[in-house]
Length: 291
Ligand code: HEC
Image (cartoon, rainbow, N blue to C red; front, side):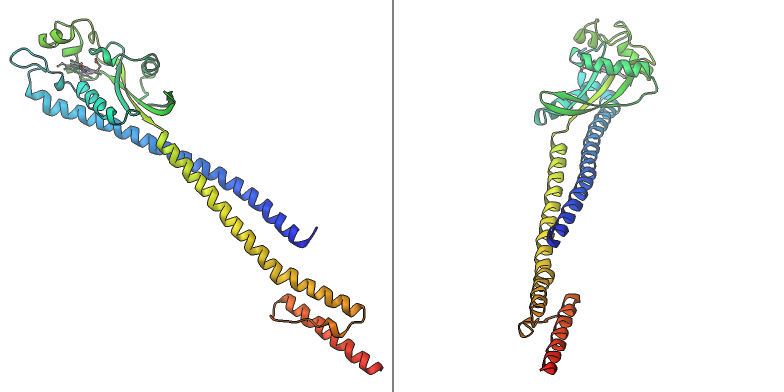
């Protein structure tokens, strides 16, 4: 095998292993970053809903008498769950892949009814009371989403004013929602889950693009290095060695005059060239002496 082939093969094998290892690392790094980004978005959405709930309880509810006005009309706008869900639904019109829902087994408003997959999550919270969060992925309409679920537990006795029995609830509320749903909740009971869904689409697209451009630029750097090393190899080693081999061949066949090597630099190969020139001069002198 020729010298150039040996060097090129070594470079190719080293590059292949290096690229495989760094691709593996870059792939996991970009995927982890995407997951962290999506999780952060979901947490943000959830925290926003909690803030909205607090605002409704602390600033809107006190303006009314248990959610109803003096005319006996109940205003759901004073209910934190309603405020959070309404705002989420408005937001969802712009960003359909994002969703926030207060999924409940026995909800006051039937739109909050837990879907079968949400029921499974609520049951997990019921079975493990210490669990405060469940994170997972879900495929919906060709979109991969990340979900974060927090349990909804009745810890405040004031909730039971509206969610224990219809006769305890404000009459205006029962008039609006009926006396069938959203009652019978108990203190300490886990009744549902706050469910946030965030799409993976954009972060995973960014992760893929970052990964691809990393691989592309690494390959480009290698290609540039490969070409540069081959040009250098040819100019600094292969060509001078060929000249010297020709000179040595000429000396061997007695063509002493034609065996002159032009030396332009002072590197190791040039030193070899000077040595051939010295040998040529010595042989020339020996030939003159013998005449
Ligand atoms: C003044 C009455 C009232 C009080 C007090 C009240 N809620 Fe509600 N709650 C409602 C009404 C009415 C709805 C339905 C709102 C809608 O139309 O979305 C509701 C909805 C909910 C929902 C969404 C699921 C469903 O039932 O539709 C959750 C969860 C909830 N409430 C939890 C609580 C918790 C926890 C407390 C105590 C911190 C509480 N509620 C206190 C009236 C009340």
